[in-house]
Image 1: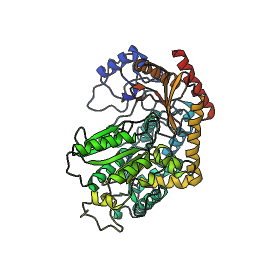
Image 2: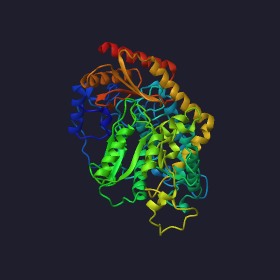
Image 3: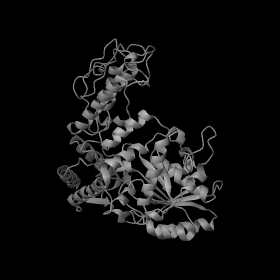
Image 4: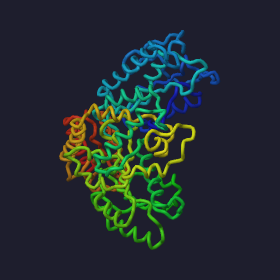
Length: 547
């Protein structure tokens, strides 16, 4: 059945497209994402943005009316776009000899809309109704500032709202305010971390901040790292580095060992690396979701018997559904004894090592050869914010050094473009630096500790007599009706998710160990105790109704 999240409805559709959409609208509300308000969706062909190669839609069904671009937005009437508005109002490039008043006004207006969007989050659902999108293609002539802002508003009105107190479905908290500003400055600077001459101060900042994280994670002198656009890329970079350091670049029989609950990005990495279909092996987990050491040892013994070398063992510090943490100290000792590379996928959990009251959860982290950490997942650094840290910084240079003959030599050890897979890179380190500076040590600790308190409060409010609670030591948990089979869990979680979304609480329903579950992530600082108690009561009531 169709899902509203998969629909991208633009202003212009053919008669056939509009007729099909009308039929879909009239068929079943279940065709749309739970919580979508069909009353908000009105479709009519756009009167001012008609593509020259598209015919006018003359036989549009009456139930399908498309709003013109000047229709009121969620925040009241949008500014009317002047027919005389042209691209000359806003130069495509900022002035290089004086302050550009048009650019300044445009940024101020765009920022005002963003602030209004953030500040009104609690007044609507975290998952918006299905909305129209402006055309994706450029027109023959560029459009002016007013039209650009109106088009931007349409996209904002249809965006997921992480700033809503009920946004609890995923590891996507509200953005840290300083990191929002840093993202804007990053775009304006338009520096490139490929090479130092393209980002002199920011390349230094990246090295310093990676060194700071490495020290906080108790990695030794000589450790360092590189920023990457997301944890999937950090994990891939780590495994390519491990393969090179292990001397297995050209060995088709090499294998990576991960847990049953490890992230899917590791399977993607294995495909990109060209490993055999059985080149990534999943090791069973215990009742707490942690990798079994005994089973890992059996896997390693089997690999030796079949002459299959091991590229790396990957420990997960915070699994996606329950937040479980693999036994890092034991894994580190085993890898050290057998000469294996240990990578820790700490995209979710590694930041807990920054807080004195939770650092014990990440015991042994400093014994890893490489670590992925994603400050975006809890500290609210605007996406994307991921670091790959390595025990020996030279491992990155050895793996990815190609030389950059079109650049001047690096001031330091190596250009940023020779420390990872990415060449051209935005200065994403800027928003991490500014966001952490805004929080300070006390703010970082508070974000982490309060997230755990929210998870504990929810777990204490759930009734174990009717709910099977799946949780770990971090800030997320999952639950399902006690004793329900997979089919009932599928039905129950779908109904619960829709019911909660009607109450402006958004949760997710992942499949874990063969059954759908309701997953809740408590990393949203706007989530109140009252909302948590309401959520617990709703989950308990829904489970009792099933019984």
